[in-house]
Length: 248
Image (cartoon, rainbow, N blue to C red; front, side):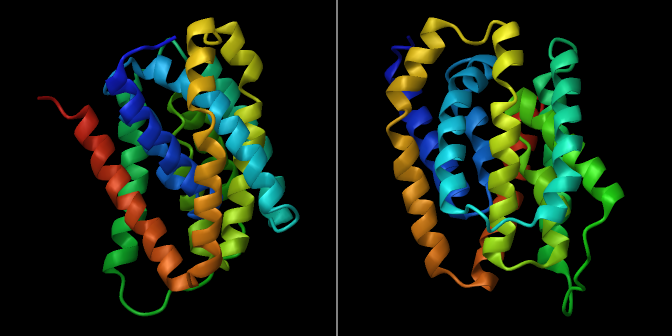
């Protein structure tokens, strides 16, 4: 079990942010979890500690948003995401964490900047099978390695101009399936160590608290503010991830 007090400060903030995001703010800002924890431990260990907590959060959020998701989107996204997790498993020891962070940063910044600099109303786009396959696979791939599937998923869902709950619900369903699908691959890779699991257990009580806070926020904000927060979080995520991979 990790005993460093600095780790628990960073991890507590990371878990609360992830819970609030999954509970009601689109899920994208949950990507900061691994980078925050990786300030104290390795990215691989941070991902291993965070996964059981994310799985519990996904189960709690699934209950809160049960039946509200957009089934056509999930039918497109989930098979592609599972293929992406398989690719992430195969390439786990090949690709660098920094390379994955840079890829996610580019996606996040592209959509955030486009949102804040656009002029006039946006045009709603219907679900696209090709776009869903591409973004779904990328979300599954980056989620497996560094739990950074939120920005690619949002890149697919945001142009559809959904109601905030219709946007949140497929994100919840998506990550419930993707994160629970990592159980066997993570065991195969030796990530389920007693130290990591005990550390996850210590942090676990923060999971329902974060979900509760996120859900309360979700029920009280309007769509315009909700999507400003989502895009703002994408902007901050992109900057943070680029900072993490920039040479000193």
